[in-house]
Structure formats: structure tokens, C-alpha cells
Figure (cartoon, rainbow, N blue to C red):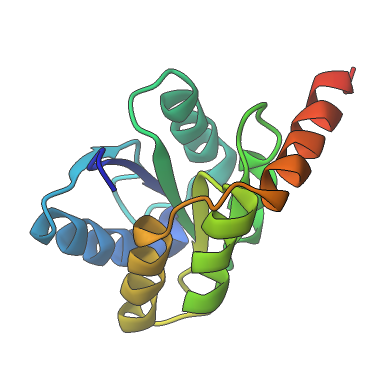
Length: 151
């Protein structure tokens, strides 16, 4: 990926995993925009999903990574934002294909679902994949049309 910027956010349930992912990303030369949380103190995940989506939509980074206990809450919250296609992935195949086929711009991972080693591999698969376009572009455009028509 040409743009080596990524936004990352988490809730309290995934704070330790966020530290692991950030360390890995830094070792690969990524500029990391961390939107929080900054501790294991109980917090509300939509705050961090919103901050991450705002950063992507404003052009601060092309891609984001959201972490919470299961990844489900973060993916629901992120997908409420126009222009965001967040995918919950627990394996490398899905992480790669969601970029290739769905042009996902946010990866969600559950810290209580996958361990740190697999999480780092999932992140790598997501960040190294590229949207293939072609027949997939028509489908992504259909998603954008649904979004535009939503009242």
C-alpha cells in the first residue's frame, strides 16, 4: 500500500491487543493515528468507532482498524457512517477478500475471539490487499447507491 497511514481505535476490552497491533504497524513503518481508548477502564465503543470513521472520512488516513471484545459492536457502529465499509474478520482469508471484493476500508477484530498472533496476520492480510475492481466495483457501487438513498 502506498499510503502508510492507518487509524486505530479500540474499547477497553481490546486495549492490550491495540498495543500489540500498534507495535507491529510501527515496525512496518506505518504512521498510526490512535483515536483511543488509552486504558482498560470501561468505556463506550461507539465513541472510538465514530472518531476513527471521522478520521477516515476527513482524509487523515485511507484505512482503519477497530478492536473490541468481539469486534461486533465496532463493526455495527462503523457501518453507520456514510462511506465506511467495515468488515469483522477472524481469519486472514476474509481479511484479504473483504479488501479485494468489497473495498472495505475498516477492519474490525475481536480481541476475545482471536489471539494476538492471528490478529497481526489478519491486519497484514487486510493492509496488503487491494480492491480488484471489475465485477466487484459494480457491487460496491450498489452499496454506495443504497447509502445515498437512505433517508
